[in-house]
Length: 436
Image (cartoon, rainbow, N blue to C red; front, side, top):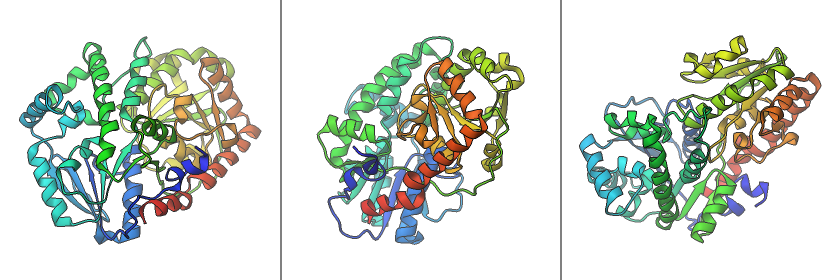
C-alpha cells in the first residue's frame, strides 16, 4: 500500500454505511486523561476530532475503571463502569480462558456479566449512532448489545508485540518489566508480582499471544470497520481474515509550539516511561551493548532519559557515569528537546506506531533509531531519521547526527515530513473521509 493510503483509511475507504453521524460514544478501559503517554495521546486525537465534528454535548465516553477513578474536566461526557472485582476476575479467568469462549487473559480480566449489563444500559440511554470500541478488551462486549453502526479500534496487534517480546527475552540486556503492558493494572493485585518472574511471564506471553491473535482475527466480524495505526499490520490482519473493512487510521497529534533549535553538540534524548516493557528493554540493550562504540565516536556523548518515573535510573547506566542523565517527567518538552541533536529510539520489540517519533518530527528533531524504533512510520534519512541495528551502526549514526550541517539538514527533513504526512490538517482529511 502506498504512503498516501497509509496516511488515512486504507485506500481512502469510509465505512460502508454513509448516513451522517450525529452522536458518538467511545468505550474503553484506558483512562483518557491526562494525555501523558502514547495510548492516551492517540485516544485524545480521536475524541477531539469527534467533539469538533459533532459538538462536545454529542460525544460520550464509557470507561471501565476503578470506581474512585479521578474524573478530570473533559470536552466529552464520561460515564464510569466499575471494573471487575477480584472475585469476578477469578471467575472470568477460569470460565472464559480455561473454558467457554477461550478469550485472552486481558479480555477475561475486564469481563463480568454485570459490566455487560451496565454497558448495554448506558448505550441505550446515550443512543449514539456511532460506537467506537477501543481494542479487543472492550470489543468483546459488542456482540451482546443491539447492533448499531460500530467501529473496532484495535490500535495495534498485541499478538505481534508479544511475539517480538518472546524473541528478545534471552540475555542480560532484557528488562521485561510489566511484560503484559497496561492491562496488568486490571489484574488482581496478588497476581501482579508474578509477572516479574520469567518462569511465569514467558509461558504466559506464549499463551496470551495465541489467544489474543484469535480475538484479533475473530472480532472484526462483529463490526462495520476495524482500525489499526500501522499499515503493515492492517495488511496482515486483512490477510488473516479475508476482510476488506480493515483500515489504517494514523494518530492525530496536536501541533506544538516550536522552539529555536540550539543542539548542544552530542546531547540526545530518550523518551518514554520505563514501566513500559519495550522502552525498558531497548534502553537496557543500548546501555549494555553500545557504550564502547558510542563513546569512541562521541567522547562527549550525553543522553537525557525523559519520562514518568525515569528519575530513579537503571543499574545498566552505572558504567556510563555522567554520560547518561535520568531526568524524569518534563511538563514542557519543547525547550529540552530543542537542546538535543536527535531523539534516540532504540526499541527491539513492539507493534503499532511510535508516537515519540511523530512528536520528534513535529519539533524538527532528527531521529536515530533501530528499525523497531520507527515502526509504523515508513521513514528514512530523507525524513530526518537515521536507522541502524548494531552498536557500531548506531554509534556512527549518532556521530553523524551530531555534525552541525548534517543535523540542520535532518532537522529540516523531519519537519517537512511532519508537514506533509503527519500534521493535524493532513490527518484530519483522512478522519473526515472515514467518520463523516
